[in-house]
Image (cartoon, rainbow, N blue to C red; front, side, top):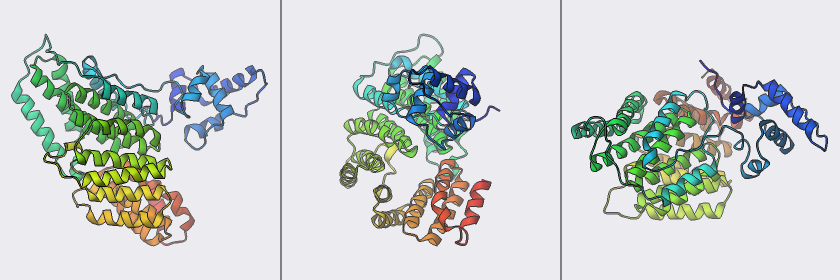
Length: 441
């Protein structure tokens, strides 16, 4: 099996067939070429630290790395490290000519998920995709000229079965990923090779968007962010083709959530802002405002965060004669309370954070175990900040048990992020056992 590639620098090296030592040599050459006679202390160990996310190269080192790869200086000014490195992915454009291409591209990425695990779209790429979705009017669906006539009853069955799979409890959904992949492959084949009327084609694109979105979440939960992004790109392209504006807004929200999760909150703002312009249901707007509040909080923008939290609460309390879109139907007072508490944590308001997270945990239904596992890590974080170590340890172990049982690797990863906060309390009974358990996993 190929080695995991977890950093854009390692991927850029792999594209050129360079070892870490090869890169260090090229950085030394770049330094010698500088008129000011720069010297570089870069060696294989330094490159390894960069590629393991343990250290960020200095600005001087980044200039030399750019020189070694032939990257224009303007790219360094436009993008933060490491997003200017060569080999970064670009989303497939929207439009009827690209819907099947986006699906096939996503399927190839899903096969390659164990390699470029680090890779997501840059803030600029996401902003461009969101703007394109907002501004581009989808073309009319066209009927394929070859292949067999698509059977409407088959589409009925695919829609019904997909809905049943999505309705399974969280713990069971970990076992349905291959079934959902197979459904998506079948729908892609029908779109690519079948003949169908415009209404049936619209249903196929809508089904492809829904399936690709769900399959993207399966990859996201496993920490396979490259594949998740590709699947959501395909979902957005097909939702756009089906004229499903609300679903498209939900997919942009998924991209934004991934950016926040990967500590790139700035990349979340434009997709969420575009989505808010183009969706009207109050539940959808509540979720979009809440996620934008999370991004603002992570950026330290307290005033903007509080405005979005107030808007999220007002929208959630607004009645609507229409049911909420499926992608946000689960949004509840529990989500509002816990995510508000997470915002307070990021803004340094520990007591308020603890109260809000506790309130939300008490409201969350038992059916949402994955969400409960994530919320428990937030609760543990707030308990640690309040120096209630024993209770934080209890909550963390419960979260880890739950995440392991439902097969959600990203929830396990979230628990691992608590380890540095526990280290000062190694003398407390159970803390060392927790660290050993996480290392063994």
